[in-house]
Image 1 (spheres, chains in turn blue, red, brown, cyan):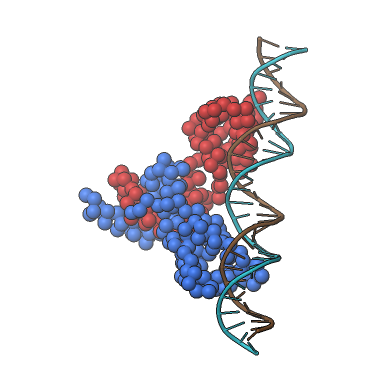
Image 2: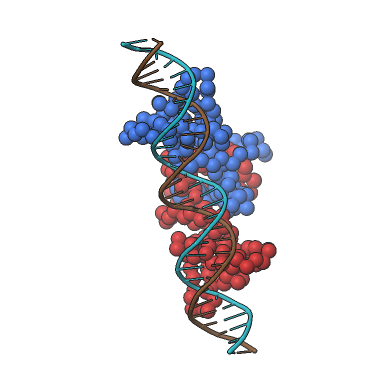
Length: 130
Length: 130
DNA sequence: CTTAAAGTCAGACATGTTGTCTGAGATGCC
DNA sequence: GGCATCTCAGACAACATGTCTGACTTTAAG
């Protein structure tokens, strides 16, 4: 379990990450149509700017060996989730995750399959740390 | 289970809420020293602006019956947690909370007491929805 | 070779957010 | 009256966000 680095991406940046999670190793020309239905002139540049910012944050990697650079996500969904949950716990729960889970479990927002998954995960933990 | 309204507060605003959660029904003069150690001139006005924005968002209520208005939180910690978790689930888990909990449980970030609380909460649920 | 298409890069831009503060005026107290 | 204490309206710089323009480079086609 690595200590999760703080990852902050905006909505537009997240959309790009989603596209890259869906299909890794895309060039800009491939990303644009899946992000914008109306094919405007500036959209290519917009995606480019977003990718540049994501790269600066370490959230995507860029393969410059091709003429058209190929991009891939450098963070996974789980990394983002971990980062957000950590931030949330720090800000609102004194750094502890317990209240978050408690809230979720008691909130009734979980499906039966979710609950089953939790039970199993808890059992595994119990075996590892008696 | 109320559908959680989207609540967005900035860091400075959150600090004010924390102070109001700690001690409800405070006037500005009472809030300032607990938020800023260096007693500057503008801090009073800063807190005032923050409270005004919080009121506009429905996060605090203001009692204007006194000369110095008295403020109280209109949202609880749990409301903020719920709002953030919902947003997180929508953005990264297709609206489902299961992955969030799974991540927390498997991430090893939970103390034994947390896990015990979860087990109990799960048991209660099991009784309600067989 | 010339050209057009397709890229990259640097940077601008409008808009909104965030935390901060100033100044004008109202109100109560000694 | 004079002073401390409020409220209120609004200004402000700094930064974030999503968007786009223009200059320049490289590739491939004619």
